[in-house]
Image (cartoon, rainbow, N blue to C red; front, top):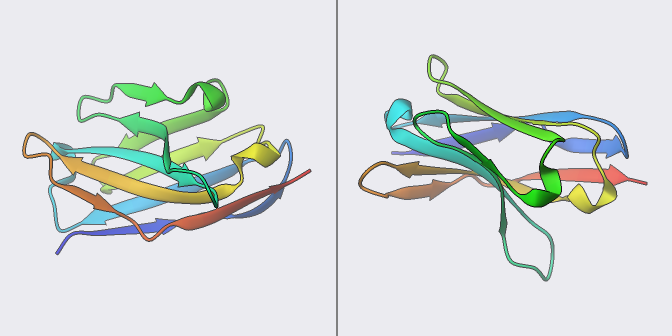
Length: 117
């Protein structure tokens, strides 16, 4: 059974930092594209950052230069370092994985990030 366990969310003031972690179990981590998405009420879930199996990274324009995604294949964990946080970064952040090449997908339960102004 595939599971994604997220941690690290919380409340922070604007300009602060948080680091999200997501550990994958039940699938070979090296074979999975990993990422983070976020959602706010009334809006669709949007991609924040993706890291491919070859460590290529992709970011939403709104977070470029502030967020960094990384993966540790030894610990089966993907991280999202979020710096210079803004109130508009507030939302529920979801960990995502996609097995390559089968394209099987899974989502974490989501973790709240709140940035106060």
